[in-house]
Image (tube, rainbow, N blue to C red):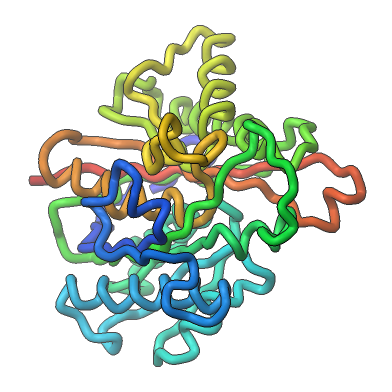
Length: 334
């Protein structure tokens, strides 16, 4: 049911088991015990970084199917994306599966965009079992958006560190312990920032806009949730969102976290401002947050993945970096 300007209340969408596969930096971070598998090097037993990212996504897909005790033939669609040109990671992984594939791109917001699309298909009864998933890899993303790792360029503290991870989850019309109860689809918001080495602050206006619109559509405030978590803003972007809400007299306090700050230990890991990338929100949500819901630490959370809608060509033309964010509500039912 449509609610307000941009939101939908869902009645028949649930989340089954999920799988998260990561690289070495994430393995050595504070959330390691919530991941299904981690590799000890960035090549993930493959010959190139792109093939390493394919390995991550392929592993996550297979483990997710196994955890849900489900064959590929029972899945109606796979909805997902990545940060590489033409979504090559999902394209190349899904070529080995007899499975309808809807590739979506929202930059680092792709995790929640996939849930939005998949949930809409289930709620409208166009599907019953849908896999949603995303991936990112630090080395492929650096080459895609900034400079290859071999370049060895200087990196400021404001830069976010792309997470090497893939996450895949099952959406279903069968009742489980986790319900996807609402969603809010975001708009492209341009804060007129143009530094590709400070994408956290570039995405912050979109995060602010979607959270505020979600509150308006449902006539609620931050107290409605045990936890509000953004996807990829890390230290500087999260701080900007807090300050933007203070300007309209809304306090986001300890119940507001960011996946980019949860997945790494900034005091002891060299990750600059914190984590980002398609795999950041997917890894934290499908690993840590689902576990916290199922263990009863949280009852209701708002997940807001954020994306910077740029490429290397347009930033070289001195354009600003618009952002987008999509929000989904996850609730513990049992």
